[in-house]
Structure formats: C-alpha cells, structure tokens
Image (tube, rainbow, N blue to C red):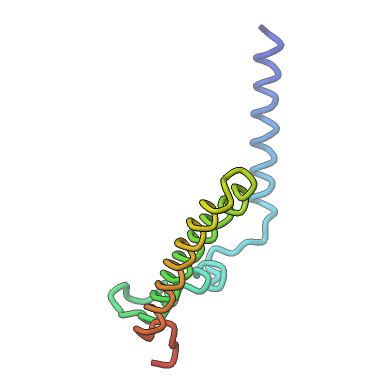
Length: 117
C-alpha cells in the first residue's frame, strides 16, 4: 500500500514537472493572429459577429456533410454484398443511389453548385 501511494505521488510530480517545463520552453505566442483564427471558416473571428457571411460557403458545407454521411452509408452496403441475396442487394443499392442522384440533380437545378452566382 505504501509503495502504491509513493509511486502515484512520484508519477504526479513527474507529469507536473514535464507540463510546467513544456509551458515555459514553448515558443507559442498567445497574440499570434494566424494561429488563433479558425481555418477556412468564411469570416474574420476578430470582427463583429453580426456581419453576414457567404451563403455559398454555407451551402457547400451542407452539401459536403450530406455526401460525407452518404459515403458512410455506402461502405456497409459494399460489405453486405456477400451476405445478402444479390437481387435484394441490387434493388436496395439502386434505390439508394437513385435518391443520391435525385438530390444531386435538385441541388444542381437550384444552382447550389454554381459558385459564381
């Protein structure tokens, strides 16, 4: 019991010393504007929060998230190819891909994919 308390105390002391040394020796500047700003966010974080941002940026983000989730749904379909009946698998896959293409056509028809507008 005594050795467990001693080793726990020693581990806490060593980890605290390492963290303090890393804070002291690091060359990080808290005032560095490049490091503090978010990457590709579409607006300047130091300015007013009430300024409008690009609607195209928002739409491209939503489209990316939708297709990212759809890819995550397509991977299990590929893995279940050998388990499920071929005809059933084909019907389900074609229906899912039809919905994807229908959504892509709708986005294209609404000019959501056109960046120049």
